[in-house]
Length: 278
Length: 303
Image 1 (cartoon, each protein chain N blue to C red):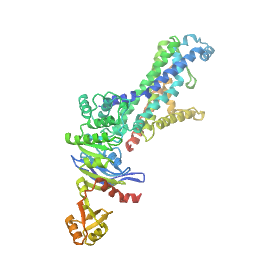
Image 2: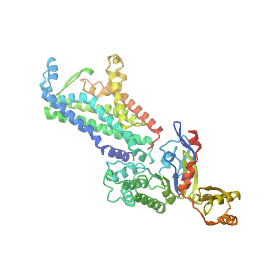
Image 3: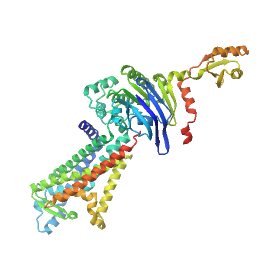
């Protein structure tokens, strides 16, 4: 029964054109950045590597490009599209009046929300997979297959892998990026459960994320970084460290699970006490 | 089938429904009347577990909606004013989606209901291509899918043209006759309610001001039309004699209990007032309703 209801939620979600905005924009953005990198011949990365005594040639690859593209897209575009859908899940149905049609049926509000959250999670998985696959495909159009070079000054990561290991690390990073997508979807979903318009739920979720992100980047709060949600949402980057710190990754994942559970409980509580009126 | 006991709902300081006690017996077509904001939709919302009562109890099909909502609504179908659907999906997919919130529904059952409401041939078109009448049929189909015993209709005729309203009326009668459903009909269309319902309740500013049979409404208060050369003198005389309790305009008098039109005629003729015509006037639901809602309710005073 839950599966049938989830299937129906997915029909509703993927039957809407706006659900595909994220996929289309990610494809355009990734291809655009890859093309720009192709035209500039990795000039910045080249200077960086050669300044450290390495040759850029083996690392000017599709994998390196895909990760350069992902670095800004993951914290900026991915949250936007996930929050857009997460904010719609309940609030749009309330706005359109279909929620009233559902709630004259003998389904409990909590069960309905859990089904909707799962549908949002499926969307998040699909978007992250699309992000990863589009990234590699777009990069491969312009660059050859080869080794991976990744540099993230913020996380003090400067690593190089051969193509096979690099692809494994790339896949691991994408897998961990799901935690980021679920968390943003969870925040937007929580706001969506309140009596607000869908756009308000999306904007509130993005605002929370941006405020958290800004605070996390203020040097004064450097000692408090593990208290910020966006710090833990960078867990995917840590899969690209030379020696992966699994303890740090599991710790962040656990904290994100806790956050997500809290968001769901707050959303369910707000929705449970609400009056659903036309 | 539906039992409301001292039901009340406040939105902030505003009283939407006050101390409402009502029973809808099995097998009836029950009308719920009231102007906009009278509390009809809020009451229906509380029956369906969409609006939480501030106090009181709501039982549907023998189960308390606030405690056992799933059990209470298992055999309930509902249609709202301007029913909303997933316009970008087909009518069939909408029915599948909505019916699965009650129980798994077979394709055969959906097919039967689509046939019953007369949507066959258009069920695979997207809902955005449906006319208002087709949407109303789709709304009926989704309400019938769980094989309900109780159908709650909240302003189902809203936005329909006269042809659509007549069709809706026939459909409601057919549902009652063929499927034996208990129907709660909330409507502004007094003529529809008058033709369809056996009992009514009238809400005014959140309070019940009448609950009874339509037949009682029509026969209410011994209203009689009197045609005479001097209506004023006739009314004064009848009032002095204690035969009438009131008059309306230059045409109607209201007889006291036990007084007949023969008694009135005899008194007038004896007094030399010629009677050109006298007959019992059956009160319409509209007259009755307007009389009821004219009187200020205690809730209105509180507000």
